[in-house]
Image 1: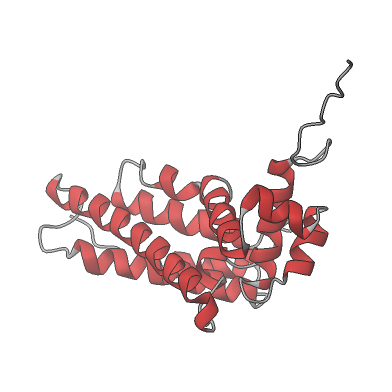
Image 2: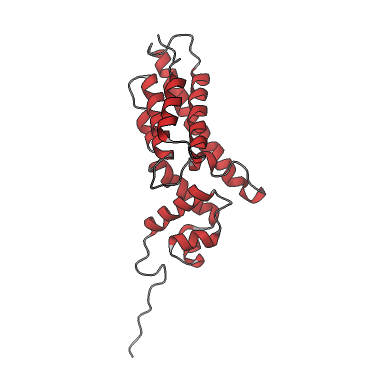
Length: 202
């Protein structure tokens, strides 16, 4: 007796999970976590809600995956900046990377990590806390790098690496907010250059 072969279940042929996640990232980046509805997300991703849940999980899980992609993609300049040979080089690279990423014509303006969930309802608290931790992690990495710069004599002995790291992260967050408001790349760079002129030198 001939038996019928059952078709494997799962996402339909032609479904590109990476491309769908990239599109979801852009929606979250442009609209924020709570502003991005499931209808907007699935329409941009080109899949059904059922397929979204099956592949990525719920909306918060999708956002977490999108943030990972953002960290490894548009925000990857942070890791590269920390490898600069001097503390001033680190700060300048962080600022330049922020300006470049937040004003790119082909992407939403601003920063997903800064503006994605500054204010949320109780339902979005998990994402708000996630982004707080994401920003704190970046701050800690910069602080550790500046501490090494003090230890190596690249920064003056009296420099407070925690305060200096907070200065730089506040500067880059401000750049992201200004970029989201339409301030141009040249003006942002002029402002950043002025902010770094008082950099402590050993």
